[in-house]
Image: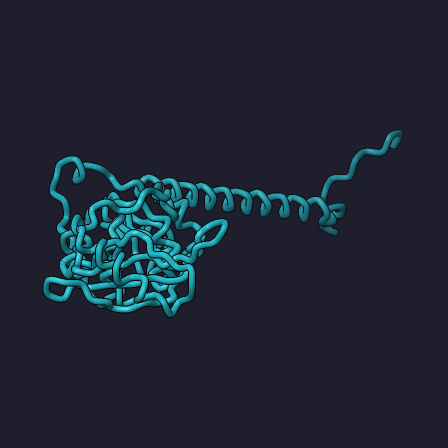
Length: 268
């Protein structure tokens, strides 16, 4: 496994285990800056939503209006299986638009309407009161690829190589934003796919570079050796001190005065 992929996996594992650190773990914002609606919508799609959309969402209430439709994409099979990290998703013949309620202040998102191609025309797929997705559609930039994932029952956003969740279902897999090539391995694991084993790099630059863990391990081992030597020295010093104390407190032998020479008494 290359160092680049290993570093990415470590980063992704940290994000998944600690959701609160997801935003700080990457440079991509968890909530991209809002921008203008998508402008690459075919004329026939815009016409269908303008003509059929109002009738489709009538059951959601009054004073409703539809936002600009956005094209839907799904994960590429090759991406899910661990291949082609540069092409995560592909567009499908499906479009989704936000349903908002007109209010004196800020328009209130109340749901979404989806339409799919059936031959040469569009047909209504469903209308749902998904306020979370409706709010996300109002905020994401126009160039964002909108990915529907039926496996997790959620929606993802993809922009400039970064993937982030848009709805609660997607957040069961990912918190915050991650590079698409890093998220690929976790998506494959979630789907039950086995990513292909990475071929070890044979380049001179990577092969001749020591792992940063090696000097750390040397330092740890050296520190442990010094600590052991110090402990031994302290124990030996304590033993000598105890021996000296015992020697000073012990009384002289009883026969030392009988056998030894007696000092001369003055005037004797």
